[in-house]
Image (cartoon, rainbow, N blue to C red):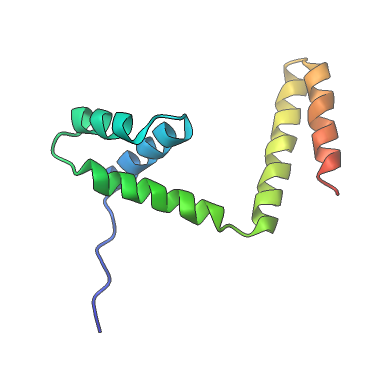
Length: 103
């Protein structure tokens, strides 16, 4: 029986999360690796990038009911904030989005 690999450190998780943000904002692989080398010169940027890609893969395998529930809760929160700020036109759009989630 092989031992489980060690859990990633909090610093590794934070760095992988930062890489995920760079990926989702459209940065190229080269840009991400270069920036990571500048920010974290003692780290292996390819390993951190692989961790970020693994997070994307996991997110892509999420249960559709979880994604739908998250979207409903996010739209509800958006609606609440828009009403609170007096942006009733946008609040109405958020309300329609909530209604549309009902299928």
